Image 1 (cartoon, helix red, strand yellow):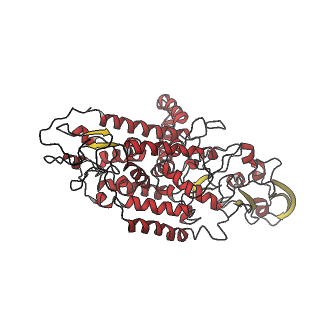
Image 2 (tube, helix red, strand yellow):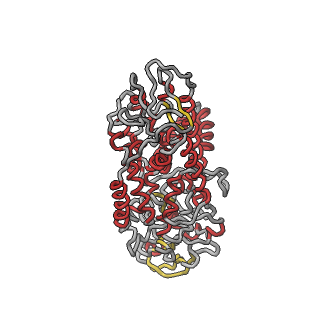
Image 3 (spheres, one colour):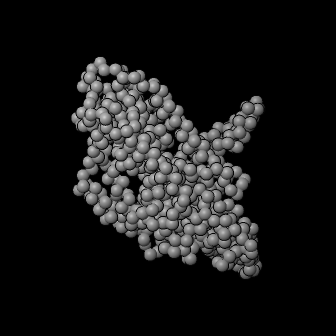
Length: 526
């Protein structure tokens, strides 16, 4: 067994390690980043009722989502149990997910190379790296009180949400504008542009152009995380990421260890190379497995071939001294803060136009299970599902709601329930979804064309998808714009048939607020 005080003397030789670890890690990062993007693109309507691919696959392997889901005492989702496999591998290999798989980590590495590659680290992240553990305890304490804010800070949710609300709509808008301009110029440009545009529509572009809410705020949050790379490499991962903290707690006990575990007395290059600050010169052992992402840079760049990663004992386990008082304070802060955060969402009279996705029967349960990943925004073929801002308080930030003026709930679609990884939008057959009311439409006679102009308007009834129709007509006498009495067809809504899909509100020809609007279902539990 190796002595715990062993270090390599100057000039000591070791078998030359394989020099391809960094290349393998980068290829792994690129593969999983592209795989994440490919699954993102597959979350779209393609003319079929059932999605062909498990587009929520990354979220099924996210143990932070599983931990919060269990703490909220929500019904267990079997798909989330796959995350235990990554936890088990972390006990063996260490925090490999952060360095080899995490698409947000790969994105930050790429942004660092493009924007700040020449800037040295400032050391702020090193001093703040315990914060991510306290933040993790804070969030999990809140989840135990059924205030699940984990999804706001989970790196997979954060990246997916940013793609869905900012970059993907911007890309689609830019490409459609570009090819639209080429089409206006006509031949010979269209000889090339139209086949390319058709290919992009079949592979990348959304089924229908969408307008998403909260793009600027979402972009600002993402830009702030990228800007932190100016201070230190992987600042988010080192100091803030709660998923990284969860993996770090498991990685402390990993079987794969770095040798030598101390800095060599004649060299300190490893400490400068490590982008995670996992090697400390004044600690024994110097290598912190809870912080190491197995980037293998220290192994590949060691000029004297002294560094190796091996399984087994013989190496002192690094301490992860978080401080008992600090941990208790973080948990207590979560317990105290969460009731304050949910004051707005617990109002006895919630926003009457806050319409939740189909199948949601309880507002409280929905808030505790939704991880704000944004997959339902991405997959909605009409763009009707949008992120909530302040309508449900801070607890409801980035949860989904139906905004009929932007898009209705397609009667023959239940894709949102297929992509939800936690069952916040319950998975149900299409015929059950079609019978599940989200709200009820109400007519405002002060804006409705037959009432105000004295002429027929059949739009809402024509588009109503239910059978029998929830919108019908009865004849009545009103005054037209000239004061003449006219008999016209006046629309009315049968609340027992209406499911609140919002197509009537979406198609209403009245400008501004529609003459018919969908209100929150009175049958929904608060």
